[in-house]
Image (tube, rainbow over the protein chains, first blue to last red):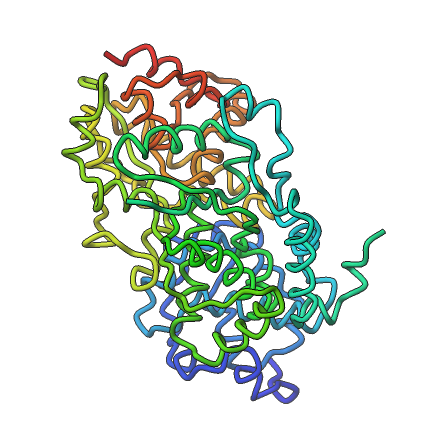
Length: 167
Length: 295
């Protein structure tokens, strides 16, 4: 592998904690990881190496961080306290900051209606179970507006504001 | 005790019978639940926590502030909501800079966050605050002679220093003892502590491998135990282990996978005598075999 083009400071940009440098590739983070069975497999230890070695281009194209199920087993078991789940989130953040095609559509749903699911829209089903009507943010337009105004000040929404414009 | 109920999205939208089971059972055990009006997505790990800290923590802060204004802690069933809210809160409690920035954002909405509100999982409230003795006394029917197994929600176990409440996260006991309090016999199996595999991108990116992963767990339950039901306490585990059995029966042309999956509060509600139509009516694999066994 050619390391001449690698970005030696990449780890500082993505996950600025010395704990990452303590990773000795033991693979505990893979044992028990559901997504390590995926195709392609999520191999957290390899991602840690890519970040440490500064393999920017390879990491930019890696889809596997998005297969993580967030069970956080790796976070519990890592003997070097690398906090692999935090690393996964950090790589996703780096990718979606540098590549707008990585920005998950779910954040537009949350911005638009507060949730990723149609919460509170199943009125008849809820009524048939004897459930009360929900005070969702969708039913509270003033609160919804405040929440959106707040999000508009955060980096991901500010930088990609075209995604959030009302049609 | 009084708590704010944080419903998340899957429970009220897709499995509202679980919501009703929680709403009906908790007050009977002395836990009064108030709605978290105007709450937003927890936010799910695949959303804002994967883009930037500000949008993640501003959303956590928004939700926490609703309960804080009432002077109450939050109770959650969904594992992902629980973990996202706990981790979000943990960031804010331990990083004064982040908290100050989030308060700048929240101020725009007329809110202020002191991080006084804590976040609890429903199984923790049942196990540690209510207690199994009180539960045994509160039920009218029981599951004596019926075998079941537990699927522990990962998000309530790991990382234990942020989300944990078990004495040992590697040897969790809460759901087992809560289920035994209903009279059932809880069997152990080799894949007991493995994840259900239902959350995040795994099931979307690798549907075949994710199905195989869940199948290994279900096969272990079938081969190694006498279980007639599975108990979970996370909406993702519930939907995944229930729906995947239907899928497996169809793709493998079998009827082998027919173990009903219950959220713990659904079993509790049935044992308390609540109407199954209200608290345990939505499923891929029918729950009738267990409902009819309650004595």
